[in-house]
View 1 (cartoon, helix red, strand yellow):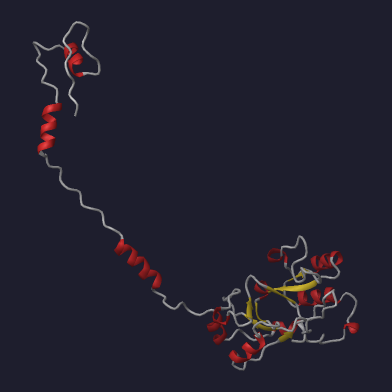
View 2 (cartoon, helix red, strand yellow; view 1 turned 120 degrees about the horizontal axis):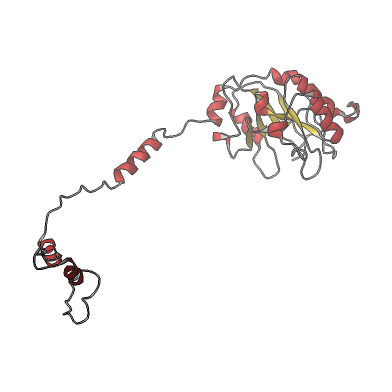
Length: 268
């Protein structure tokens, strides 16, 4: 499938268009950071940039990045900017995300940006108090990716440094005015669990299957225990006839002194 052509004339762009674009997005309140603009690592954050922490609207920080990496493309931190993007892929031999979106879309109109690879980004705003992540839910496997909290996309209007094209430009204000994520889309990407009570039932089933402890039985003397007690108990000490020393040698650990009769010790 042929790629989409660059949607605007590159020759008409101002010097350092990506830097100017990043500053424009920051002025609109969108957190940005630099990503590589060419090579096998294109679209990955520039070295030493921790995009989750470093994305910013600060003009000084943005100027410093683009002085260091003038060919970098600006990317938008979607979670910090309150945005959700439906990323439609279109590759030879793969699922056609654009066609799949047309099948599920219920006529909603939202800002759309064509990408150099032939795909498309659809922009929505997330409502206050809701921050969907990158889960596709029921749309998984149809060429549709979801980018939200914990995700980012290359900004509209970004120019690749390797001549592979550019992202369709779109005013930063249009992103801020994007429609809220519709309920039907949330129902697709964040469906409720099929069996909400499954977890509690599973725990209950395990509790039912767990063997209960056996009740302690009362200790009752048996014939063997009575027999052992009579065999193993030493004879009562006679105060007048048995001294402690003699009892010790009879029933203790040591044998009787030499010359005395050795008694056989009981074993219990």
